[in-house]
Amino acid sequence: MSAAIDLASWALLAGGGLCCLTGAVGMLRMPDFYTRLHAASLSDTPGAGLILAGLLLQAGWSLVAVKLAAIGVLLFLTSPAATHAIAKAALGRGLKPFLAGGEATSKR
Image 1: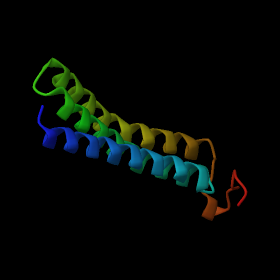
Image 2: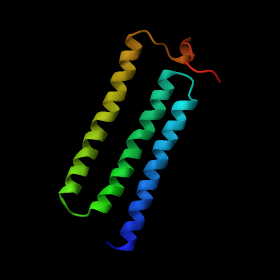
Image 3: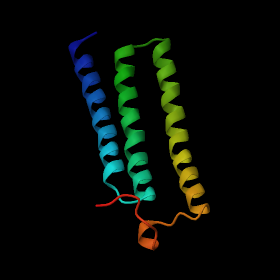
């Protein structure tokens, strides 16, 4: 494997890790359920995508690359749908957003 592919792979892996870390910080810092869900969903999908892209470069052209691509497609299709379903279920159970008079679950 060439050094350029190895460097690009590690850059993608580091970028994906940074996206996931940003989402984790957003989960800790946001005041209510919906903003925490928003922070997690916006950073989780690109973070996983970058990590999978880095792993694809490491795998080369093989069956492992096909499996990683299938995992990527499933993540990009299911992650936004799952986030929407969780938010809709919380709203259906009566959990109000913070600005609509709902209670914040963490103290600033």
